[in-house]
Image 1 (cartoon, helix red, strand yellow):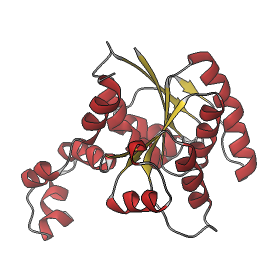
Image 2 (cartoon, helix red, strand yellow; image 1 turned 135 degrees about the horizontal axis):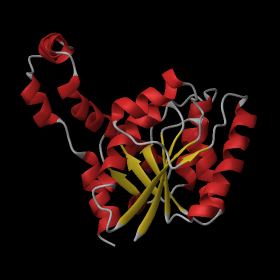
Image 3 (cartoon, rainbow, N blue to C red; image 1 turned 45 degrees about the horizontal axis):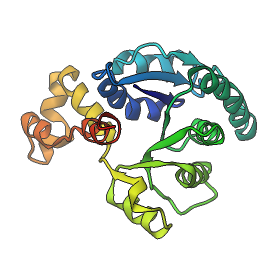
Image 4 (cartoon, helix red, strand yellow; image 1 turned 45 degrees about the vertical axis):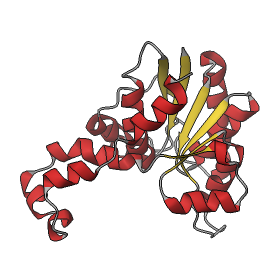
Length: 224
């Protein structure tokens, strides 16, 4: 059985990780998936509400690091996450996006010899004054599995010399989150949303949304 540790820390992470977590949970005979919340976004409005609305259970591990400077926050996440990894001994750590939790947990994983996967790999702003850009570059550089959401990510990783066998083009997991939330949206939003102005009806949108997590979980975790 594969042991997978999914990491969330900031609001965008929750939307990316939710469909992946749910897909893993469909295969309890092959996958033991657990969730670690670093607490980078730590109040109810910025964290708990996302767990409730996205249907994610309470995390198995909560680090509660809170706000601080980049250096202090990153260091505190690393200290707490190392304890989690030593306790769980996961086969793979999955991080998402480009926040401090992403690079902090990624560094801990690879230094402990744990395989690292990066959801939303390859995105670039080409502005190294942005902390997020540094986090993206470093996380991609140390990852074993790079899950790419768009074609520009494929191009960036190719230019940077990342081996093709590490790169998996999945599409955007947040589209899966959108698809799952559409039925709960108020009807007036479904009738008047931007998709209507583009000439698309609700049913057509559902047909266009890809089921990304099933594809790469089947390929990378269930087949081994």
